[in-house]
Length: 220
Image (cartoon, rainbow, N blue to C red; front, side, top):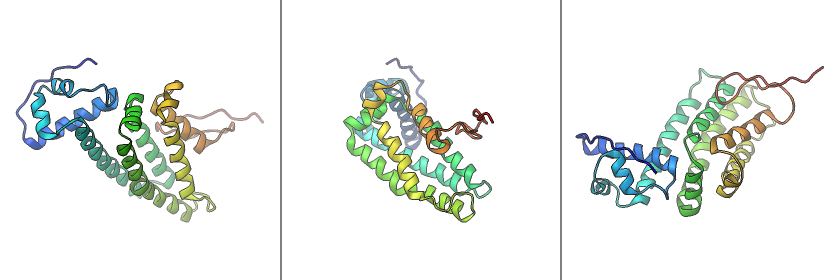
């Protein structure tokens, strides 16, 4: 892995810790947990390895801190989306999916593989976060859509979300990803297309990229 040297600047302990976390997240997501060494991280940041260890005792502790910060950030962003009552339910759900599509676009297959195979406990923590923090937020939006007649009243919102996330989790299996030519973001987009728009030749008016992308119409 190639690294770059960044000039060291005087920072407060809190600023330096945040800088380490932010850059570590970028590098972990890009190269995976196994390929990134603490030496390479320190060189990239332009600081000594001893400085990194002053804040984080080892690489696993660093990754756990990165993921804790990431969970807080995800939750804050989702709360902004679902609590924005200026948007319709459909627009909020689209923004929610768009957010996750952008997020996973920066995650490599190597990171997914390492997380599931080398740190299964952390993977389970992320799944618990999804179930206890993420799903309830979106369930509220779906319930509102049912009350406002924007969503079918017979839709089981909890089942829908569980089905969606089960598919995402199942296909994020590193063995499956490595056997198929998909990045995590392409895989998520395909699952969204199938679940939200189906498999029939009807117009797709909204895509999670936010751009209007009409699909083919059936000939009459």
